[in-house]
Length: 225
Length: 225
Image 1 (tube, rainbow over the protein chains, first blue to last red):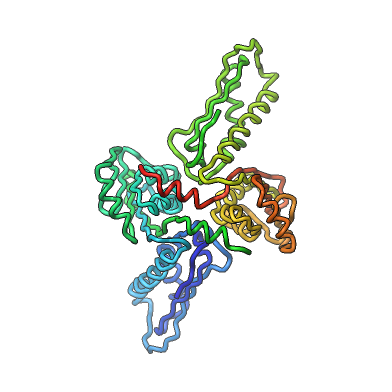
Image 2 (tube, rainbow over the protein chains, first blue to last red):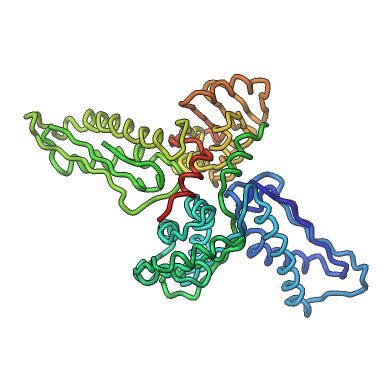
């Protein structure tokens, strides 16, 4: 189970997550698996780049099934945990304040893993990217701009921008004739955006976010303390 | 003269600024003065945390007045330049997409100048702060949260939050009975927000931003490339 809505990112924000298993799992193994898994799930989502004070995710095991998980089962256990956590994390983004679309941002071709993450975060938190998706506008310029200003090493002449399977920009060349195809993809509720930074590195990152709507502003401007 | 609107911050963004003087001023002195002055003017504003590709501010001197500015006049010249640049920079924020209010964010009591700037930027770019101001809600919690998550050293027990002259939070204690006074201030078009980080340092920073309105979303979602 997990709840969230606004104030999502960084560090889980107004999110409460509880994951349970009826296997018997030693505490240190639970802790290690959860720590590893949150990086690519609960800590890879953003609704509005805001965080809160009561952020947590708890993993509990009660052993009721009689099955015991040991060190030899770690990889399988961590993988199962990741799939549960990812489903919950994406649910939080889908339920984001005013959200109408789930956006998966993939950054590849980065010089380092940290730079991949930095660029993915810049794209995922960009108001112009989030409003463009809301309006269904295949605006590759906003994607290039967000990645370019992120601080990650970036080569415009080798960069690629995709919306779904549609390449809108590649190696310095825009393909604006494909905009109608990309616009059709943007009319869906789940959208994949991919940016290759052109640094030729094997480093990649994924972040999940939602679109920014007038409804988000209404909810957060009309809310009274 | 300066133009801007959206895509403001960091690094001047979609902004073109031209400042002219009819004094005769050596090039190096012009360059030094402009470099110094932009930090606290054009580089201290944000509309939406987005930047663009054609950002610039140019300072031109033609000597037509017959007055010559030398090294001895530097301080007076830089001060005059700063006052011109600040007026232009604030004009850009006032004219921000969908903006209805100019917000001055002051951060004091920081451990270092860089941390003061970092906290001011976090507050100025916070969607929750910007929507709260838009809705006229004196939400000290959003201000504390933005400063606290900024990465700057911060002590909640010694922190102070003010809207205009109204202290809403001081040394861990909220003063919610003053919310109506603060709400009246938020109904104005120009608003001062001050956060003391409680680190006791002499370091401070100012940033200027605007509120976030549904109109911003409309402009940027309906805009077509």
